Amino acid sequence: MAKTESKSGKTVTVEQIKSPIRRPQDQRATLIGLGLNKMHRRRTLEDTPQVRGMINKVSHLVRVVEEG
Image (cartoon, rainbow, N blue to C red; front, side, top):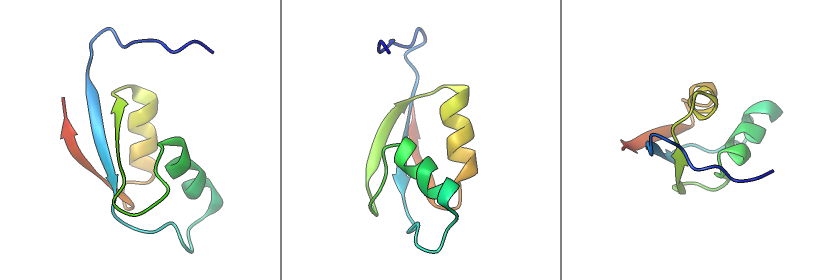
């Protein structure tokens, strides 16, 4: 798959604030999909509906640091 650049250039930075221990497997997989797997890690991601859906799914484990 080719990496595509977003046309709008909007990004969102998320930080993992809680552990995935004792969470369902799909929530763990969502964190990995977001590029998070350890506490206090931050990732800057393209602001797409797919990424927003993943953030909503694990909103109790992550926080949005900044939107740009």
